[in-house]
Every structure is written in C-alpha cells, then in structure tokens.
Length: 243
Image 1 (cartoon, one colour):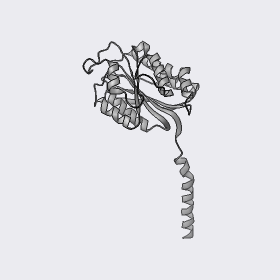
Image 2 (spheres, rainbow, N blue to C red):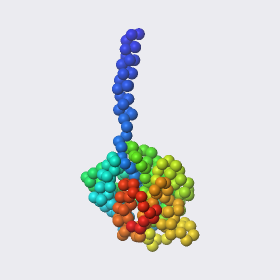
Image 3 (spheres, helix red, strand yellow):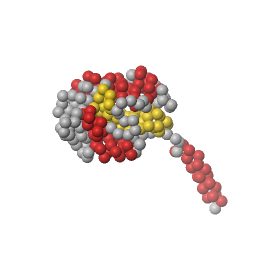
Image 4 (tube, rainbow, N blue to C red):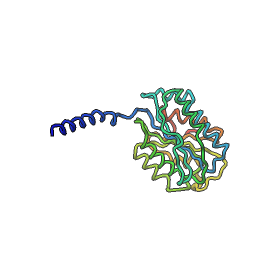
C-alpha cells in the first residue's frame, strides 16, 4: 500500500514538473497577419506572378522590416493563404515569426518556391472564414489580429461577405483590403459600385480598417508595401488610399 502511495506521489510530481512546459505562454508578436490572396481565374498567369512578386518584394523590403522592428515586440506572425471559389482555400505558407531582415528574406524565398493554383469564381466570404480558422491556430500571441484581403473581383460564390466580415470583427479581428483594378469583368458586382467602393462597403471592418487600391497589377507591389507598413506599424490615416 505504501509502495502504491509513493508511486502515485511520484507520478503527480512528474506531472507537475511537466505542466509548466505544456502551458508555456505562446511567443509574443505585435501583429498576427493573414495575407489572404485571390487566385480565381480572373487573374491570369502574368498577373499571378506580379501578385506573388509583389508580396515577396514588399515583406522583405527594408522599410517594411523597419516597421516590424519598430513594434514593442519587434516581430510579427504571418501566414499566406490563397482562396478562390467557396470550395477552395489553402494555407500556402505556415505561420512564421518575422523579426529581422534575414527572416523576411527567408519568407520571401519560401513563397517563391510554393506552387500556385488557379480556380474559378471568387468567394471573399470563404477566404475570410478560412483565414479566421487559420488565425485561431496561430502558434503566436498577437497584440493585434489582421486579415489582409486582396483580390480583383467581388464575392460571387458562397455566402454573402458582410455577415462573415462582421463575425470576424466581433472576434477582435481587423480586416483590411487591397482591391486590384483591372480590365477583367467582375460578375456579381452590385449596381454601379466600383471595386474599391465594394471593398470599402462590404469587405473591410474593425477599428482603423482601411484599404489601399492598386490601380492595376503593375502597381500592386507598391500598394502592398504601403499597406504592410501602415498595418504593421498601426498607423492611422484615410480609410481609402491609392497605391
């Protein structure tokens, strides 16, 4: 009986020793950032390359890295998601902690090597919903949570955007937008709304939410850089900016 008691006490002690490791606080970052990128068929191969290169160049830009280093923690957690119709969303790059130029360039290289898909239709609602799930699985603890939605069309697949957007905001997530203006038709656009107006009305939300408009895919890289600097640094400014 005494032997069993000693064994039980030893097991409890061992469990107590392991407990702090299991419950160790998550590594802190200033911002948890989901880059949610449209890969629907309205984006052709050349535009897709410009889009990828825009993100690669922006996140590894020394000015963006300076904004990252300027936070109270000096690091962000970032993941890259692609989405198309309601049936397609995937996490292309896992969560990575970026707090230096070397880490930013490693992220950029990883994105260059990741395969890309292109599918029909555009479900912004599906992209936001998937991004919320990815956000919930983040291995870091962020002071702020941001979903960065970029695309060249309106929601034409899956549920309406607004209820999903509102649910994200209720969970403490800010959604910023990067609409890309091009000459492709956008099936499903309501009335005479331009894409930037649609994003302002139906996509972005939360305290300080904003959008940066890329006039075309050639201007995308500059627009991404401006947007990242503002959302990483938590800067205030106009709701709509043109990059």
